Length: 368
Image (cartoon, rainbow, N blue to C red; front, side, top):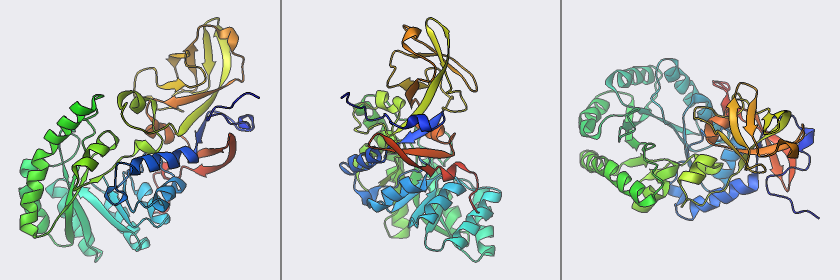
């Protein structure tokens, strides 16, 4: 009897393609591997990768109590599973502030917090929360080289003074995302991480003198999570670890995680002796990167050649080895935005699809 590969689903022909397949046993292994080098009490995983309540519940049941999210829908998904502590790792502006207030009122069992990095936003948060008779838990967002959001650490004292001068705000600590640090050589990555966080630690010590207590520091993502864990005194926020992807498996070789999300697609045409076409268009796999955007486990010699909305053309050594209807199992180059393209994920257990979970936070709004 032919041995089955871990990714194969015997009943895959009962389901249309393209499809997102997830493997709970491998997800659980990835959580366990994270715990081998990181204390669960110092973890605040980012849920933007999975956007799925059942997967977040797996982390919650494993002992993780703090989470990080990028959207109001992701916050609500976490509140729906009774996550105790959730950070909106994004500075809320415009209607997001009022949505955050409604969320806090609807889910009093969850402690919500958010980021801020400028005086105008800070004043709006203060006015809105004061009008709602609430207090906003605030983390100062710091720019450590990502150049996306955040206050420069050398301006942190001045911004702290603005925070504490306003009503209805509670200063919780610091947040610094170092997503630009992802060198394949872990020693270089660690050195850059230490250098980036030197001014952050100086700021943290100075602020702790002012508040006469320790402050929370939330730092990093998957590439630097173990570096921050080894440094101690901070919470790390990996996200991609839960599913893993082709990009990180190539560029973070020391990390122990396993692929746990697969895109299933089918051969729909064989246009030339060295070409096949599958139904994995760029509406079905993240396409912000150049080709190849996906790696096929059961067809490693198939090289993405041309990509359009509903079609992916692959160059192969011999198209005669394929027939229309053949299922290819692909690992996306970037799993996080790939998952966001699917409204449900098929669960694969013991080589069978056994059900599905809604990718509920793919929505921009759930109820709030």
